[in-house]
Image (cartoon, rainbow, N blue to C red; front, side, top):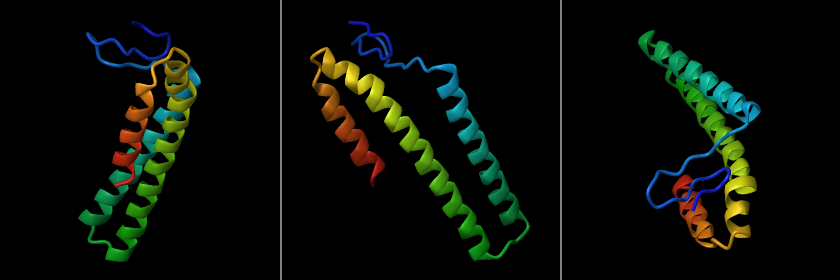
Amino acid sequence: MEHKDCCQCEHCQKTKERSPEEYRSLMNRLKRIQGQLRGIENMLENNAYCTDIMVQTAAVTAALNSFNKQLLASHMKSCVAQNIREGNDEVIDELLDTLQKMMK
C-alpha cells in the first residue's frame, strides 16, 4: 500500500516527501550544527579550555534536540496522522519505539 507522504510498503524503504520549506528549514539547521561541530573541532585542535568546549557541545546538543522536535512534529502531523486515519495503528507503536530511542 503506497501513501501520499509516507511509504509503508513491505517491499520498499519508508520515505517522506517534504515541502520545499520544510526541507530548507531542516537542512539549514543541519548546516548550522555542522558549523558548530567544525568550531568544536577547531577549539580542540587549538587546545581550548575544557569548559569552553563543553559549552559549545551543549549548544550542539540543544540544536540537535531542536532539529528533532521540528522533525517529530512534522512526522506526527503527516505520517502518523495519515496512518491512523487509514487504520494503521501500528504506527503508534513505531512512534513510541522512536521516542524511547530519542530519550535515552
